[in-house]
Length: 517
Image (cartoon, rainbow, N blue to C red; front, side, top):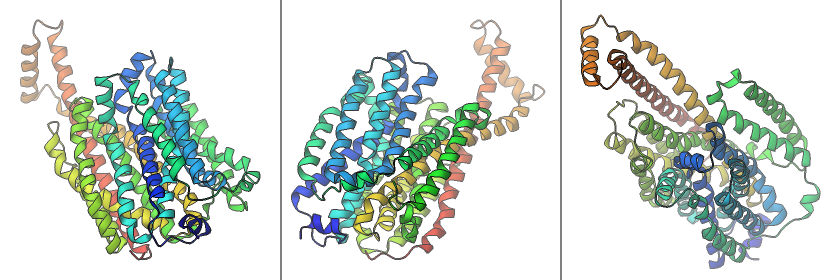
């Protein structure tokens, strides 16, 4: 019996897979990297895309939102696709759809076309992420799983970290079209390699006849509307918007119906029974918490440098490169440690480091720059890679190979939902805390105070002759300084509270069952 057949039958392989399967895995990892990178690669180039397609500010945000909504709908369906079509066919179709949609995005002539094609790109590419993780658990023996998960961990963490930097560099050097054209040739090569080398199981077309179409529609509506609410809610003042309120009600109704139907169905579109495994349930919860850091910190740091320090995308990328480089250097060590040490201990240490590293940025000032973020990023980077490798192994390592495809989709959905909820909370909390600190600071701008009078006089002298009303302009500049201080204090609050989330999640480690390395 071959390793592929054994894996399909539910027996984990004991020997290293043959070289063709290893090449197929490498191709899958590269495809996963492209799919994750494309979430963030356009983030620093939205202004250029908006100008190039004459889009409004409301429209341009959908370039990101449409991708995220479509991707999160596809991720949990990947396990079913693997069983119906086989891993090779499912991955190749996913990569081919992603590549063609990327070409379409580059050739889009209007913002409406780009939004639709980004949704197709996200939907097609979304399957590559969990399929790659499922392949790793299906073909590699447990004794090398630490090194394998280290590679996947580097991809998962580095892609969103370097995405804005790569996007800004490509757009400045060439044009925004190359953000998408750059996927075409690698995408074709990955398709060829996956089709040629990723032959590890056989399709079961009979499953298609039992496909729960109502469940498929429900999960699409539930996850799609949930992602929409989380993406658009902070900017629309949540339920003050009729659209957000309506989408929230649709999400709740679809969610209740989906869970009720799925738990009663003998052939559900997504098998939630994986959560009956305690390690998977807690590991998926850890994935949710890690998603907050993976996507939240990648979002929070550029916000600080953009709003407070007014850095360019390239300058922001240079600062954030520290996290990616730390994880890149630590991943091989973390992978080897996970092969020999108790995974729970590594996860314990990782959560502590992420929490401490995040809290280390809770004392920022308007002058904070590269060096104020250097050591905290090193600590967080080490912590993240020590969390990601054990979390995935703990969640998926005790499941039979036949269940790994479905469970991998659920694990990745939890991580993405953690990121989406984290981003929504960050935006909401930032607005609330900015208002709070503004109201606390603004009484200090009292013209009866000598220091305030002196500052206004200094600004008036500086602006005299260059503006019609130097006094009002001076007061405006002073108010701007107060706003910057309020923003910095709000960022400090968020870093403090995010760090606390990780420290408070440490006790969950003690609920996990030991997995033999």
